[in-house]
Length: 434
Image (cartoon, rainbow, N blue to C red; front, side):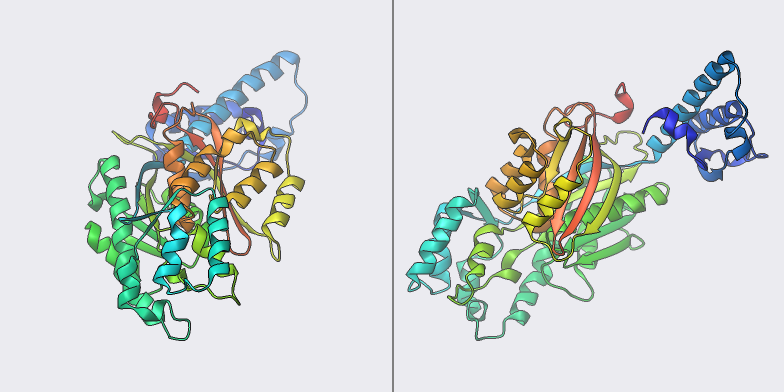
């Protein structure tokens, strides 16, 4: 939206100093003065409405119109500066994976061995083909061969296994999330006690009290830190958690939100079965990982914003396949050239990335970060998006805008518009020339 468009929007909201709430303003010049003052002296929120009769005033001479345009531009600039200061941003990123790393070209043999299913030669050959076409090189797992030796119910479809899975995940999920969060906190440079809010997302088990309480304890967060637990969001959970954090940060002065997303595929692990061929696809794609970010509005001191969160939205496309979702994206295409943006797309598999690339006619390198994450880690569900952001922040994005696209069950589509920091590895936004 241009500055002139911002200036024409009614009602107009700007931040005014709390001692500067005087009678309603009746001229754009006065509004510009107050907005500029607010941008300089600090702000508190209030609503300011420009009278309609002022906006719809009679025609002026050309000279007056020129003067009015200049004042409107100054007003819009001041308002934009205020909104910029209040916009949430990603301030730090951390990622973590379990120690057990399996090459993708060895996974089918390992999987059929630990599930005692080597006699299913046809399914094994099919899974090897899926692994070969997956675009994945390595994956990381919390579970090992010993896990299934000690808990045979995990690979026997005839035995109940929920209790064993829940017991394993109760500690493993917050511990892996803590490993990623510790890296984000270290990069942020402030103590864990400065975190005011915690958002934890996972599809791996559900407990009460939840993993958020255990994570807060592991990190040493203060007891008054406000916690939000997001369960079973699937592959869209990481994007949803960032959307929640953005709302918290922009509506609570001084808030610093720790977002963590940890997913362990043990909850999905099943032995192969001829009546359930879809199991092979799931076992060939998913891996384990955790990502964490610090989100805050109004970076101060030594904080270095990596990505500004310009906007966020969620929608659901009911009753659709991934192919139909891609067609929907094509129908909604706007005049913007998608290749002018950077892209963080959920690396759920080659079909998802190929579908988005084709539907939006993206150049191949636009999804390079997503494809690297898929290749090196597989589909880590919600945590994958944070890994993609971690890849993108290492590139020279030069203050460009981009789109983060999370896709999950539903089909749920989480869309976030981002603006990268101007410098490499996240130079402070205030130091950049816009």
